[in-house]
Length: 260
Image (cartoon, one colour):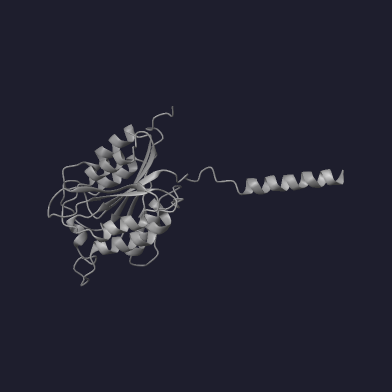
């Protein structure tokens, strides 16, 4: 009898441990493929200081941030790359550089390090192509858009956001706005358009004003599991002169299609 009781106690303890280590049912599964939609338009060749005596191009800061985040993020999901706006000058170019691939950090960085930013900003075309590559109508998918400005090639980010959401099985689009604070844009669509693109697809719009904040934004959106707290809007002030604002999208429950 003692042995039977001891065995039952051991079994109960094992079950308790298993329950304690069970995966949080609310944790993101992190098994969907992802596409990075990377801004290589002419504005990314501009200096990060915007006339404050610095010679560091914006694209260099973005390269450094990606190089820091990708090695860990690509361990857990397949990641691909689309670039929009690379040379020649003033063209609306979109390049599919890599379909979702395992351990994609090195091939992505080879492409990003070789970019020459010179063209315009066909952000909508790039996002649409990324969604198609991900087979978004039939599979869960994630798109992370990095941009330092708005669409300048005739597209409407909010409209494509609604269109993709309506056709998607389960699509999330996050948008990282790099150094867009207090900048007067003169393009065809305001920066509010890309914020709407994220909101329409259950994603976050994250402004980043420094390399450190860019790393944090990329890690929140591309990393696994995503560490964003969606309970309420918040602002993380890690340094006195910089910010990383997490803008929570409005609830989409009322507009999402019922599951079949």
